[in-house]
Length: 174
Image (tube, rainbow, N blue to C red; front, side, top):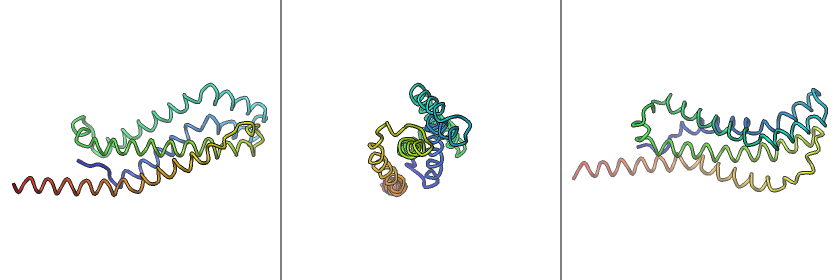
């Protein structure tokens, strides 16, 4: 019974990054429109208020659905196709999914509330009125937790596999 594989780390990182990008589209779209000169700053600000104010949960849920869907296809491509196989690999699936969600949240907070916030201000949008000072320390904590889990989980997983093999070998000798 696997708990985590090192190959899962790249898959998790890519899926979480894409999810954070999708979730932040509500704020990125007005910046791109204003920076490209497609719309005025006032119209881009109205779009930003509408997309973030009214539809941010749709973007977040869409990103979460995208992450879960791509993780499911990732595991299916790795031979976990039936419920029986998923039960045998449940710790691996659970650890990989939780790591993906942790990394997603870290990247989402940093991308949306730090990077896009200040890019919007630089593009001329009146987003300076919103106090996003909480986002930097929260991003640091979330990124630290995600980095710690990203680097330690494969080591913990390999230790757990070694312990399982040792217990199995002991049970076979008795």
